[in-house]
Length: 363
Ligand code: HEC
Ligand code: HEC
Ligand code: HEC
Ligand code: HEC
Image (cartoon, rainbow, N blue to C red; front, top):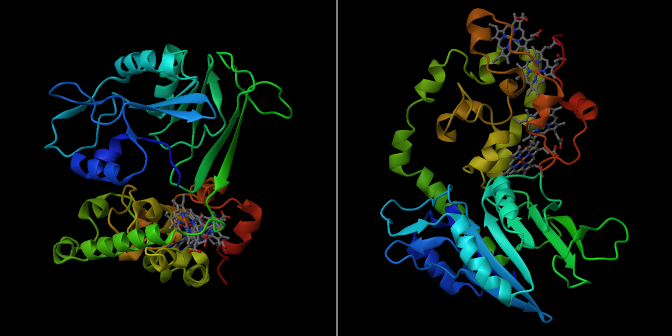
């Protein structure tokens, strides 16, 4: 993909340092971290920075992980640690400043953490922020003379920045492009990673292998045994819990028959068709009650809650059924937007779309 550098985050360590080092060897670009250090001598585990020459303009790139984030690492790996990012940046920036014309910090600290760093270090030209999923900062903002920006999560978009330095005097005072700006400018745009971009066959192969392994794992005898029981009894013991569309059918036949023919009823099959049914990132909106009180944790124990069912809109039904309590009110547009957010449905129109799925009254 033509990468120049990779800033490591906390999750990159989840499969162990040896594995990460292997990946680094096979990559054509450096893995950076200025604050993951070996305990024995405080030396760097990865390269702390890289300087890239862009038409004679020297761009220094370094990366930090928030000190309070820690690493998601194998418990046995006690020989590396995350130094607090302020000490690391103090050291790295004084090295970088003499050698680069532009400094980028890949800041795996969340946006607030990056703002804190920006207030501390005037010398950083651009913070590219990661860590906490956030779509609110795709337009650059400024702290002093530093720019901060963060791409949206889960790989549906790529954030593209075009920076023009016409006046190479620090601080650059880079402005966001609005119409015609004569000075130093930054333009950010979100590129939707849709069908215009062909799948890479090599990556596709890896992904298919991964899906196969995951399905095999979920279906191993051990997992099956774990899941032989019914839904987590703790969930069912919650006073108000999800009971599934089948349990509504006998009294609300009209609405059930209608719902059964909406796309909501087949939302889980849609995931299965793509072999994505085991991915928690997807399950949330394509099932009913995932990780909710009285809902479920594991799809194998929730066969009765797959797809977008009645209780996704009307709330958990146990007390309605057992005690005749009127179901929790339908909250209107807000209910729909919890799933029909701009990332997954950029064309949602409440009035129009409601007409398509609104349950009919009894005949
Ligand atoms: C034993 C029969 C029975 C079952 C089972 C049942 N309901 Fe009902 N439901 C009723 C009756 C009777 C009413 C009308 C009285 C009321 O509003 O409580 C009703 C009303 C409703 C209403 C309209 C409430 C309103 O504000 O007017 C909704 C929505 C509803 N049920 C959803 C469900 C869902 C979802 C399920 C399954 C989880 C379900 N019901 C299961 C009998 C049932
Ligand atoms: C729990 C998540 C969730 C909620 C809540 C939800 N939806 Fe959906 N909706 C989905 C999913 C997922 C699909 C796609 C199903 C598929 O095609 O597999 C969908 C599909 C639809 C479709 C069909 C689109 C098409 O291409 O035909 C309409 C219309 C719709 N939803 C409207 C609504 C409205 C209106 C509300 C609120 C009253 C709502 N939805 C609430 C998740 C949800
Ligand atoms: C925040 C809620 C949400 C999450 C998370 C989510 N979806 Fe959906 N998905 C929807 C909604 C809403 C629709 C219906 C969109 C529409 O009506 O155009 C949908 C539709 C779809 C469709 C059918 C429409 C199409 O584009 O062909 C597929 C396939 C799909 N989702 C796959 C996935 C996968 C794979 C994941 C996990 C990476 C995922 N979804 C995660 C809400 C979600
Ligand atoms: C995508 C959201 C959604 C799903 C899924 C859904 N409903 Fe509804 N349902 C609605 C809306 C919206 C209304 C109209 C409520 C209103 O206007 O206050 C409604 C109305 C109702 C009513 C009252 C009908 C009337 O006017 O007398 C019942 C009963 C009901 N739904 C039962 C169910 C049952 C049972 C299921 C599952 C088989 C189901 N609903 C699935 C959104 C949904």
